[in-house]
Image 1 (cartoon, rainbow, N blue to C red):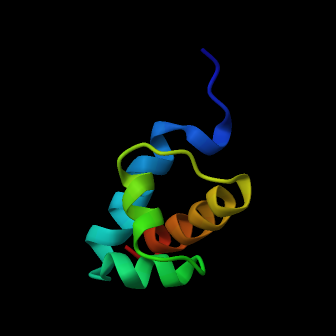
Image 2: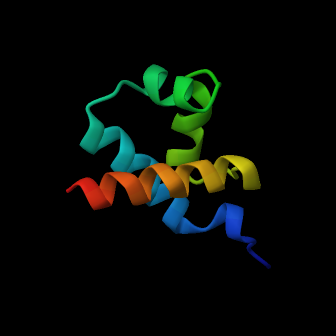
Length: 68
């Protein structure tokens, strides 16, 4: 089974980190991506993410890590 970059466990970890560290609700996290709360919740459980959303998440995660 092949795994592409948009489905790596690091995306799952990053979305959980974003939610936990930011104090944002899942709804607010979804709004960062122009989506409902259901999509980032699904990502946090390992559901696939589009490459565009994975890139945005990586940017947000990098910025959050640099801030801390």
